[in-house]
Length: 269
Image (cartoon, rainbow, N blue to C red):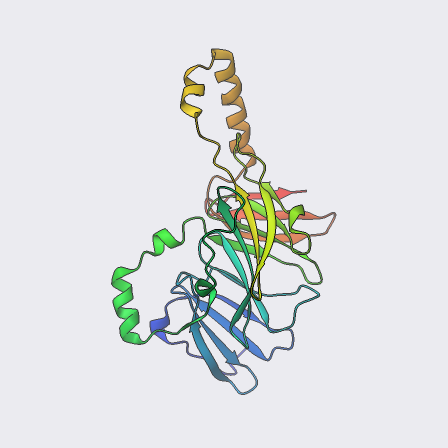
């Protein structure tokens, strides 16, 4: 094979971390470590536009949105803290958000301005930001892997919180944590809210560690042993490091295959 043509993403935009292409092979979308996205026209072999994701953090995953209701210009972006968003790359509008929130099931703290695309920074701004970046904080509990089969109305996500989630994109209340729930973690709740032209799909989780120390102090030896066994089973079943990739297979039957940063591969059926 030989190189037909070559694109050069600006080096100041950072290391390329994700790419996706449309079904007709007319455009290519590139995401970088610094959260900058660039759209290329493959027909005329030119860059069309660049913009900054509002999270200003690493673009971990880019996928064409293959939901039957979606248009070919919609992409799924994994970036920010435990969040997946769906974007129209023509209008640069965010249309949907799938995210994890702690606390009560209330739509608090949602600011539409924080989901608007930003102008790509200049080289000077990138240089300044490189000395003040808190990427290690912003990537905590970030989504690292997304599986969204064609003509299906669901997606599977995994990331640095070591959990695999099934998101039902038509009936969000049917969503569930497939793998990774803590032993004493209450069942997550899911709800959808519409603000303006955007849909927000949230997983709500209450903290369950209140009063845990006093309960542990009063445990009997038998309860402590049972808890130890349960903990061992938990460690054997779940990932103990960040999930870095997820694929789905239907042969010989539907299965989820996930791999983590520690080199462990798990197959769920």
